[in-house]
Image 1 (tube, rainbow, N blue to C red):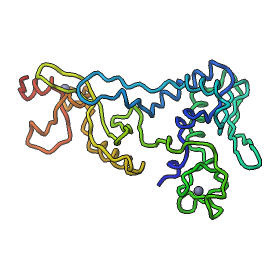
Image 2: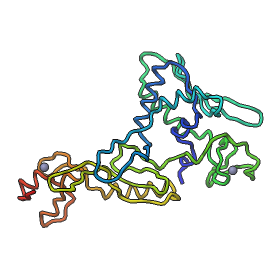
Image 3: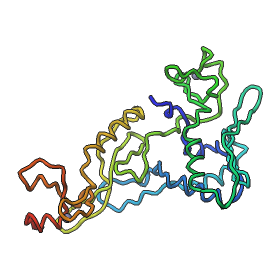
Image 4: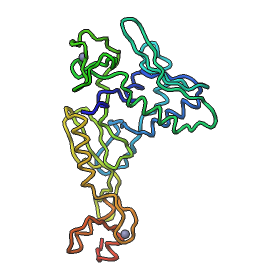
Length: 284
Ligand SMILES: [Zn+2]
Ligand SMILES: [Zn+2]
């Protein structure tokens, strides 16, 4: 188990209003665009497998930020992000004694400030913040000062009933779903975890359709580590996309063939349909 599997994801924090955002609208808007491009989540109701033109969109984070600000009182804030003249990220730790604030990051908002580097730094801080950890015994989010991480993270005072719990739904932490930009993608459905990729389907010899193809499925009980291992295994076996052996153009899955089908030799090279016709007399 990786320690990051016990840390809330940025998405789960935003969705639960656990990050309050304030400051210049323009910076907030740019930051939400940046997070969308991280693209680690799909709306599974829109994923259809098979030959069709599925356009996978991420959720719009700006709306989530705005919603958070509107109904902030109904949530518990764990982190606040201030995009004013002095940019800051602060952790809010709740306990019986009330709330304590801890400054994690600060920078002067100047025109020279590299906004992409800033956003990446903030994202990494949030995504890897060991300020709070999920206890693997009581499955609650706890101030990491109260957590023993020697083996796996568990409440340190001996009994989970004694530690103060942060208000957070840990079931929404999803370190399995992959980026929509990955060649091999992972999405968590209501009944199973699906590993899939984008391919070109050929229902008829002269008709092709782009679509999504299921590579492998896993039960919902799979651990993030198991999913990552299977994804890596599929990625290693994946022959496409690759450059055509002859013309060197990139060939994606469904747009070419394996060279070993045509020559008497073991090879991982692929060839595009055009070169299959030109060099091996393949007729469609
Ligand atoms: Zn516990
Ligand atoms: Zn070619």
